[in-house]
Image 1 (cartoon, helix red, strand yellow):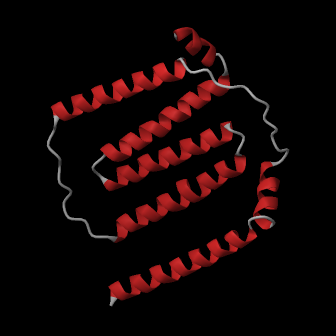
Image 2 (cartoon, helix red, strand yellow):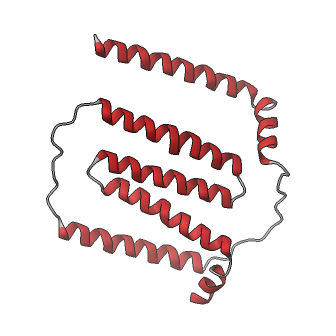
Image 3 (tube, one colour):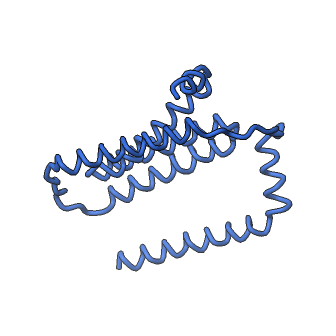
Amino acid sequence: MLSNMGTFLSSGENIAFFVFALMAIGGAIFMLSFTKVVHMVVAIAMTFISMAGLYVILNAEFVAFVQVLIYAGAISILMIFGIMMTKHQGEEIEPKRPVYNTLLFIGAAGLFGVLFYAIQNTTMPTGEFNEAADNTMEIGKLLFTKHVIPFEIMSVLLTVSFIGAIVVAKREED
């Protein structure tokens, strides 16, 4: 079982995958575990950036760039602005729950063990993958030929949602 792990970690690409996957999982767990909202935003930004690293490993550079630009940048900043613009009462400190934390750790370790065992004993099919020469150009061709109508409908939907958000914000001010 562990012999497969040795061959898995013999490649730098696999080690990078392992590191980015652990960062994504860790950021998600921290986001759920933290009690302060700003710490939650930093944790979810770490998850977004590590997901972009996973996209780079998959040779999806355009998706990785969009992930960093939109999610790690814009969404995280938008969340921080929302936190700064709202009033917060004194944040309640949660009492320590050692039994809960112990059970949580045992459950997470058990899930990791089951998934590790399942992955180690699974035979993956091999096949030929024809990679495009330029991912961004292929996405652009598909977006502006085959999927142009959904693309335009999405832009109209986003514009309407922004206008609706402005109207709702103006009503709350008055």
